[in-house]
Structure formats: structure tokens, C-alpha cells
Length: 91
Image (tube, rainbow, N blue to C red; front, side):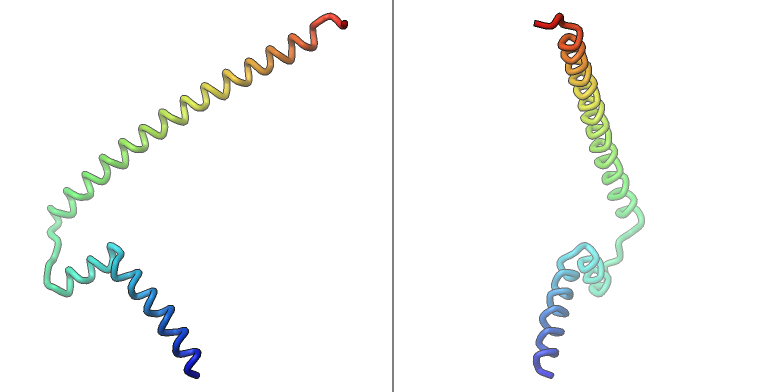
């Protein structure tokens, strides 16, 4: 019985600690303290997060485009090499 209780307390305590240090835990603590985030604060944070996410998305799209171009170039070079080997006169 004590073993089961120890396991429950260990995992339960770990879960509570993980939630307490997460953004959800901070929001719950602020709410308990009586701090209520205004919609203006949340709107500003959301707009800032949206801009950052958009910038990161644009950078990733550019990187994917560059990688696609490199892949196409490598495929063309390999194709030319194989064609040259295939069309070369036998020795």
C-alpha cells in the first residue's frame, strides 16, 4: 500500500510541478492573486506573437525554396552525368 502511495505522490508531485512552471500554471497563479489580464494586453501579446510567427514562417518558406532549387540542380547534374556515361563510346 505504501509503495503505491509513494508512486502516486512521486508522479503526481512531478505533474503538479510541471504544470506550476508552465504558462498555464503562471496564468492560474495570476488569477488566484487577483490579476486579470486585460484584453488589450492579450491583444498586444497576440499581435506580437503573430508577427514573430509570420516572420519565422517566411524564413522557413525561403529555406525550403532554396533547398528545392538545390535538389533540382543536383538531380540535373546527376542526370547529365548518367547520360554522358550512357552515350559514351565503349572502350
